[in-house]
Image (cartoon, rainbow, N blue to C red; front, side, top):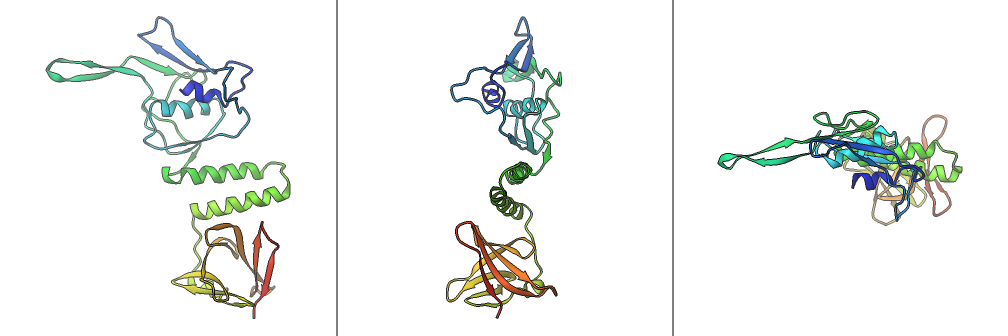
Length: 253
C-alpha cells in the first residue's frame, strides 16, 4: 500500500527505489520501486503535506518517512511512534507468546529507517493543530507563486482565517471600545468581552479578529469587517469587504 500511494506523487517515467526489506525470510533483499503505471494517474508536481501524530505507526510511518527522504513532502505534526521493523509472533510454553523482529526496512537514501526513533516532522505541531498548521504552510507556498493578484487576495483571506483559528488573536476590552459606535445603518457593540456587528434590528454577529482592525464576519469567510482610522488613529468608518459584492463603507456618526 505504501508503494502504491507514494507512486502517485512521483514521476511515472522512471521507477524510483522507495524501500528495501532485509529479512531472514528472503534469500535476497526485497526492493520496492515506484510504479510506472497507475490507473488514477499521478501528480508528481503537486505540493504534498503529510500529517503525523505520536500514534502514527508502522506502515503509517513508512509513507511520510520515504516521501521525506525523497524531499517530496513536508511532514507536519508530531514525531511518530517508531515501529519500523517487521516481524512475527511466536508461541512459547505455558500460554506465552513473543514478538520477534525478523527483518528491517531500509531506505535507499538514508540507509536506515524509523525504528525506535520515529519520523521527525519538518514542521512541529500538536496533532490536533497539524491540519491548520499544514494549511497555513500551503497558503504560504501559494502566495509565493506568480499567481494573479486577485487569486492571491483570495488565498490571503483563507490564510488569515486559518491562522486566526490556529493562534486566536485577543483584543483587550478597553481597546474594543475604539470600535464601538454607530456607522449609518450599522453598529459595533461589545457584549461579554467580544465585539459584535449589527445592522439595524437584526441579530448581532460576532466579529473575530484576523488582523489589525480586520474582523471575520461570523463564520462566513466571504466577508470581512474593516475599521478605518484617520491620521490621529481614531476610528472613523466601518467597511464591509467581500468577494461577492462591492466594498461598502459607512462613516461613523
